Amino acid sequence: MQNTSALAGIPCSRCGKRGSPDGWNPKGPRRVFMEEDVGYIIGFRYKCERCVEYNGTVEESEQRPTSFNAWDVGCLDRLPDYVSKEFPFILTHRSGIDIRLVDRLTDDLVHGKGFSAAAKEVS
Image (tube, rainbow, N blue to C red):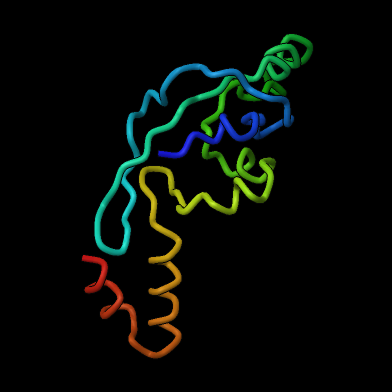
């Protein structure tokens, strides 16, 4: 289990200010496909006080979200490389896939195995 907040403050994906924990992600765990197994990740949501303050000064149409997930792309991009590069998954809206599996499937496709062979290996 990784706890990136222990290594570095989790930065807001929009403004970069350190967020404060706002509880577990309400959507629950996210399923992640790996080479030999399926796993689940769950993370905290964080609230950004700077974005809350910003929203108080602009019209509703210009307001930005005030909470974010620890694994948001903008959040990971703002973390130090030694933390963000260790995040082993590519996440979609509902699930994810292990980067090592993506690398292997890409290699298989480049070497002519085709999509059907790659699909069989995943299932």
